[in-house]
Image (cartoon, rainbow, N blue to C red; front, side):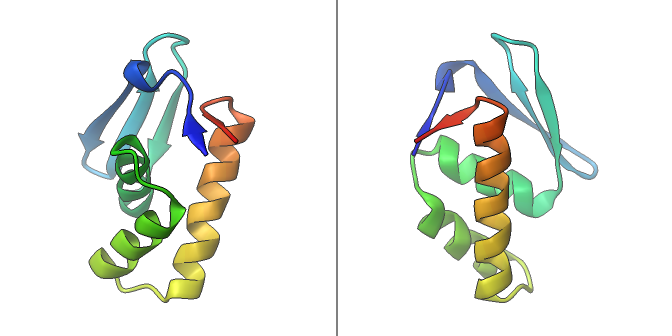
Amino acid sequence: MKLRNRKHLVVTDTNYGAVLLDTKSGQYWQLNPPGAVIVRTLLDGEGPDEAIRRVTDRFDVETERATTDVHALIEAMRSAGVVEK
Protein backbone atom coordinates (compact mmCIF):
# COMPACT_ATOMS: atom_id res chain seq x y z
CA MET A 1 0.00 0.00 0.00
CA LYS A 2 1.24 3.44 -0.89
CA LEU A 3 -0.19 6.88 -0.38
CA ARG A 4 -0.37 8.89 -3.59
CA ASN A 5 0.51 12.59 -3.50
CA ARG A 6 1.75 12.06 0.04
CA LYS A 7 3.53 15.41 0.13
CA HIS A 8 0.23 17.07 -0.81
CA LEU A 9 -1.83 15.44 1.97
CA VAL A 10 -2.47 17.55 5.05
CA VAL A 11 -4.37 16.55 8.19
CA THR A 12 -5.94 19.25 10.33
CA ASP A 13 -7.57 18.53 13.68
CA THR A 14 -11.16 19.63 14.23
CA ASN A 15 -13.56 19.45 17.18
CA TYR A 16 -14.94 16.22 15.72
CA GLY A 17 -11.76 14.44 14.55
CA ALA A 18 -9.82 15.79 11.59
CA VAL A 19 -9.96 16.78 7.95
CA LEU A 20 -7.67 15.24 5.34
CA LEU A 21 -6.94 17.62 2.47
CA ASP A 22 -5.25 16.77 -0.79
CA THR A 23 -3.79 20.19 -1.60
CA LYS A 24 -3.03 19.10 -5.15
CA SER A 25 -6.57 18.06 -6.12
CA GLY A 26 -8.55 20.10 -3.60
CA GLN A 27 -10.40 17.00 -2.39
CA TYR A 28 -10.99 16.71 1.33
CA TRP A 29 -12.45 14.16 3.72
CA GLN A 30 -13.87 14.62 7.20
CA LEU A 31 -12.54 12.00 9.62
CA ASN A 32 -13.84 10.88 12.99
CA PRO A 33 -11.21 10.49 15.76
CA PRO A 34 -10.32 6.85 14.90
CA GLY A 35 -10.17 7.80 11.21
CA ALA A 36 -7.75 10.58 12.05
CA VAL A 37 -5.51 8.11 13.88
CA ILE A 38 -5.61 5.75 10.90
CA VAL A 39 -4.72 8.47 8.40
CA ARG A 40 -1.91 9.87 10.57
CA THR A 41 -0.49 6.35 10.91
CA LEU A 42 -0.50 5.89 7.14
CA LEU A 43 1.08 9.32 6.65
CA ASP A 44 3.80 8.24 9.11
CA GLY A 45 4.65 5.51 6.59
CA GLU A 46 3.15 2.70 8.63
CA GLY A 47 0.74 0.07 7.35
CA PRO A 48 -2.67 -1.28 8.30
CA ASP A 49 -1.39 -3.48 11.14
CA GLU A 50 0.12 -0.49 12.94
CA ALA A 51 -3.05 1.53 12.35
CA ILE A 52 -5.10 -1.26 13.92
CA ARG A 53 -2.77 -1.35 16.92
CA ARG A 54 -2.94 2.42 17.40
CA VAL A 55 -6.73 2.46 17.18
CA THR A 56 -7.14 -0.35 19.71
CA ASP A 57 -4.59 1.27 22.03
CA ARG A 58 -6.32 4.64 21.95
CA PHE A 59 -10.01 3.75 21.76
CA ASP A 60 -12.25 1.22 23.47
CA VAL A 61 -12.68 -0.98 20.40
CA GLU A 62 -12.11 -4.66 19.73
CA THR A 63 -9.36 -5.71 17.31
CA GLU A 64 -11.90 -7.22 14.90
CA ARG A 65 -13.84 -3.95 14.65
CA ALA A 66 -10.65 -1.89 14.30
CA THR A 67 -9.46 -4.22 11.54
CA THR A 68 -12.73 -3.81 9.65
CA ASP A 69 -12.66 -0.02 10.06
CA VAL A 70 -9.01 0.35 9.02
CA HIS A 71 -9.50 -1.71 5.88
CA ALA A 72 -12.75 0.09 5.03
CA LEU A 73 -11.07 3.49 5.31
CA ILE A 74 -8.11 2.33 3.22
CA GLU A 75 -10.49 1.02 0.56
CA ALA A 76 -12.42 4.31 0.56
CA MET A 77 -9.13 6.19 0.18
CA ARG A 78 -8.13 3.82 -2.63
CA SER A 79 -11.44 4.48 -4.41
CA ALA A 80 -10.83 8.21 -4.03
CA GLY A 81 -7.37 7.83 -5.56
CA VAL A 82 -5.43 8.69 -2.41
CA VAL A 83 -4.10 5.17 -1.80
CA GLU A 84 -2.72 2.80 -4.38
CA LYS A 85 -1.71 -0.83 -3.97
